[in-house]
Length: 116
Image (tube, rainbow, N blue to C red; front, side, top):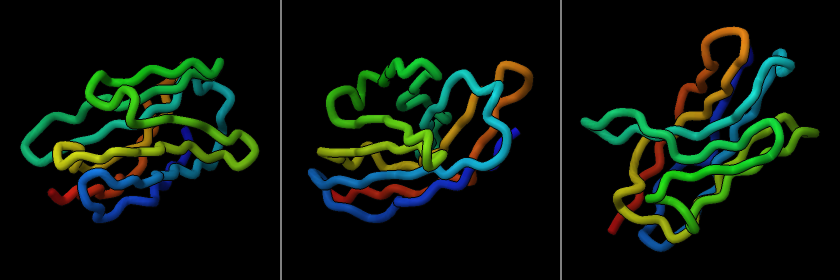
């Protein structure tokens, strides 16, 4: 298991940008993918972006071309650069680490609010 702490959320106007960070501590040896999820009020948690151990990236269609996931291994930090934000991007964003030997690790979440 790892401990994940997200930061960088806040209030931004539509069209603006935010960068979320997720700092990790613990054992990373069995992690095969890092992801960002989000959950809007009254909706299920959904996958936004994922980056594999090998560096492959995948995005939900709703954020493709606007969001970029990246990882700085030296800083043990996962990022989500969010550009051209829309009101429908408003949600709590969660960092996730997928383990090959057990359940995923989750952060506590960071609120992103996009005003129109």
